[in-house]
Amino acid sequence: MRKTVLGFIASFMLLSAHAQDLKIKKGEVLLGGTPVALVKEAKRVCDLSTPDGKKVFTFFITNKTKQGIITPEDWLQFTSPEGAVFELQNPKDRIVLSTTKYLVYKLLDSKPQIIAVDGIKTSTIDDLFKQGSRPFSAKWDSLYTIVKNMEKTDEEFTAQHPFSINNNGDIIINKEMVGKVFVNEHSLGKRDYYVKDRVGNQVAEIKLRS
Image 1: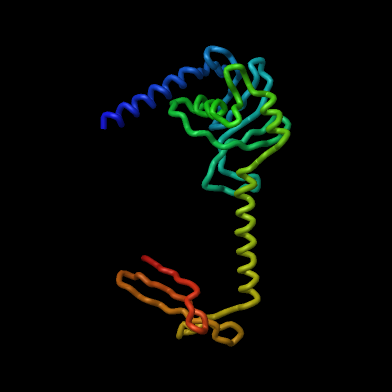
Image 2: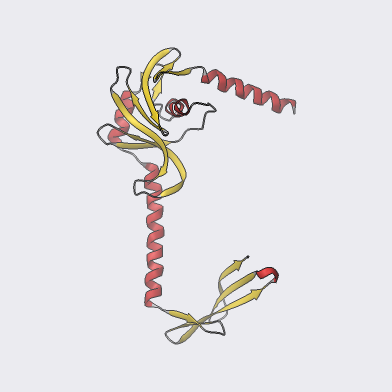
């Protein structure tokens, strides 16, 4: 128990020490007391500029892909003033009260690092925009395409092979019995459905619980 408490205290002190490295005063980002950037945040979307006011990019945390698919994963998305886009992994959250500081810490903790004590990593950012890598959109959009193609195949098969199920549970395609549905009813409205082919091999099972 004592070790757990001490570990928590140590972690909190470490986070606090790091938190003191970053300060934001009237939109000016200070690292170790050195001005490194300007930031403007509204509704969890940040514009980052150089200390002299030249806009570098807009960034935010998102789970929406290039094709507009909503996913269970989120990441950082960056957009240049010219409209170029790249994505980076969302770093572990910092425990801070300010939304602006919470988001700016993402730039400090990102891989590759976007800002540091010596300033904005402009060459790194330029390379990332040039590459235009969007690995998260690519992954989830690809998965979505695969699923949609599978659904389309199923729909086409169903359209080409219309089926019906009679009162005996027989599955009929083109007037031929190709399988059978068996129902096992339990108490409290629970039902198990088993689908078997014409020779009795089980091919599917569905369990419904009310």
